[in-house]
Image 1 (cartoon, rainbow, N blue to C red):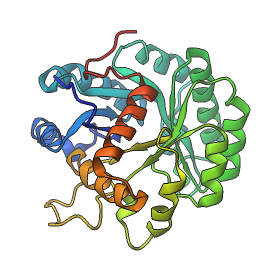
Image 2 (image 1 turned 135 degrees about the vertical axis):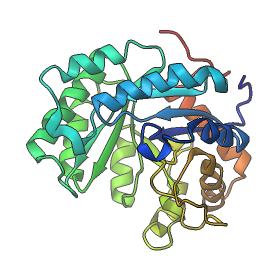
Image 3 (image 1 turned 90 degrees about the horizontal axis):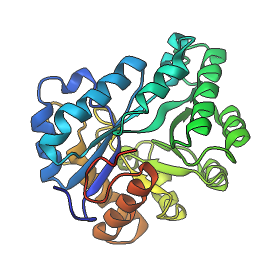
Length: 279
């Protein structure tokens, strides 16, 4: 049973990914050994959201009930958002382990789904967060203005929102903070090629708005040594991300662990002992 506030919370991990099919129990054991107490499994499609909920129910009790989930449709898959998509997500959110709407948002970088369909699916999920009073986990890439205006239009109505895997600049950061959003930080800060600007920005994020994540199996920290084989990110490496972030902020790893874990538990309404809180 998780009883300490000194354990990390990974707010976005893609445990439904095929990369984890063969060794999920071992992966969860490694995460626990590395001080990761709780994880939020990201729902990117309706099918993956259902699978995330099932993993919480099947594997959570074996590992101190540390698993939670979100339910939503990522902008990459917005083209498949069905007419009753909002109702399907709403049904999943009735399960006690499903803690937020998402992952939803806009991605105008890859445009895997047409932009009008992305906007429609995002609007539907923003409306659902408003209707249910649920937090919302969001994604944004190269869609800053449209994303900002859509979130701003609903911000007074939904309870809490986080932009996960933040990679933007100072101006973008303060626009998000002005909307009273939370910020998710990944191993991107460990990337000497493209993450250096984030290292100095970390000090600008209030600790009650900052949360940590791996986004595993993606975004393996580039400076982790020795390099794991296969080169797949996993929740156990959240400890490394926390250590590096603490260095950049100028506080101890223990301080950052306690602060970000407390913020994550408050945001997602996770029980302090690691049990799934009933709704």
